[in-house]
Image 1 (cartoon, one colour):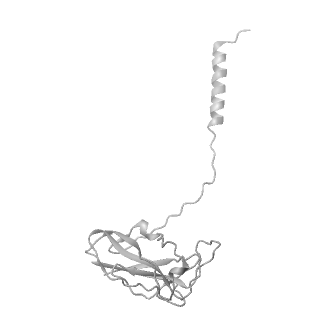
Image 2: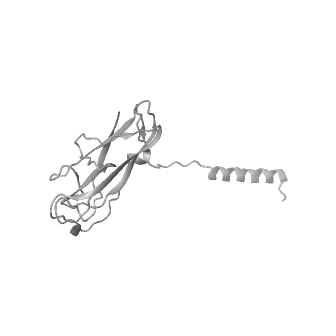
Image 3: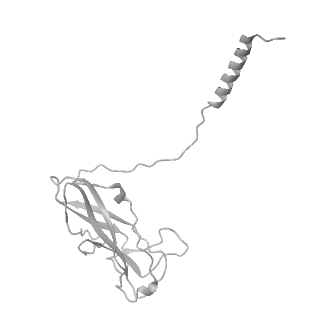
Length: 186
């Protein structure tokens, strides 16, 4: 028995349509969450996105480096980048820091074990922040850095950080700290 060619075409087309329908089924799955953070400011400049949440690596030092309270490591530079500055609004910018101060020496940030590693936190040491002129920026003091004269466009506030021993005996461990900065435009 011979099948009519039009019937064959109809059967082939039906099979093709049904297989395409199976392949084209829509599937949805949860993908996750995207957090958008930002702020609109009425200031002379805006802070560059790569400066708002940065990590400054101070390095690794032996406890033997610290022989007395007040001993310091080398300076580690870091910057806060300002963009789209308008000198008709303000001509100077300065920065201050807040964070957990060391209980022995409030001029430095207390260190902790932010990463949660097994070693625990170091003790007898804190983190000192200074501006480009060497002025120590005491956390929570409300004292701002030496004013930086702005130019229209992009600007960079140069800063440094380093470890400073607060006790004669420093114990090993993680030596991390978080600080929040505030800008002042004049």
